[in-house]
Image 1 (spheres, rainbow, N blue to C red):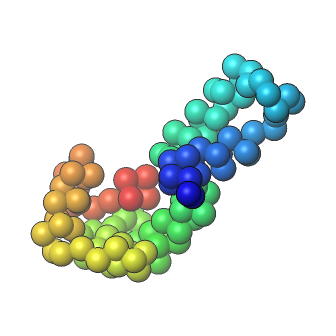
Image 2 (cartoon, one colour):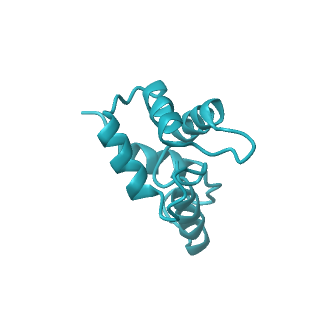
Length: 107
């Protein structure tokens, strides 16, 4: 069976490390892996690229943020159909500053 998305993402990120010995993971290699993994929040490089493209496509200048409508449009563009209530709930959960919009990091 195909690997889980988490295993696939971790495998890709682990593969990005320059490893000296394929059988042993050094502390610095483990630390670098965690750094890559945390910076992408478990997403693959391609998934991060897709999210960045959607954000740039729908972000409102000059602040380059996504409001509720734009976030919903970006998610739809990525293939995720949400109701208005689901969009509102998602924005409320993510928008910890209460600004009513999302930055790239929050998206």
